[in-house]
Image (cartoon, one colour):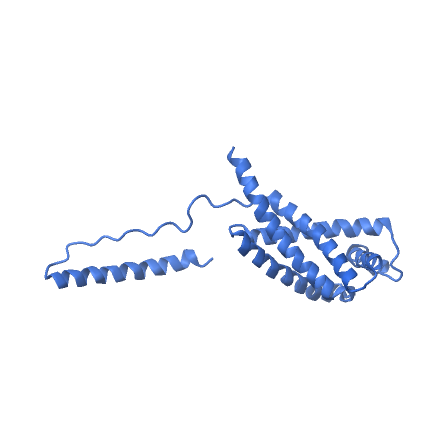
Length: 207
């Protein structure tokens, strides 16, 4: 990220050092320096930079939204939580953002409309977060992208369980280890899926 600015400073110092070397060499040979010439540095990146793939970013976010849900359910199972009741509870917590706190449990019963609203909101947020993560990892190698995706997932956990709870205080109920692991998995999956799908899109555009 700093390369475009740092490059300018480095080039100035680089050429200055070589000019001093040319002057020193001429002095050592007992002659006069007529001119000096410096090879240019290679461009910042070789080859064509991958374009941002909007479809791949949205798809990666939705895929991460699905995988993180199953990951959270698995964590509930490991932690001996009632998985079905926890899923119904979190669905109502999410739906309450749109429908208001009147839909909050107890009891965490199944309601098709509440589940639909929660699912639509879940995928909308997943796609939005996927776009943000994809923009961060767009030009990175897979290993670097996955690492940054993990960090992004933890930052999303802080945002959702910190910032969201100041507006929607009922989300305090889901501020636990399972939710943190699910956010971590979301970031990793979104980054990995985008970087895996992006080269496929580049190849398709090149034919």
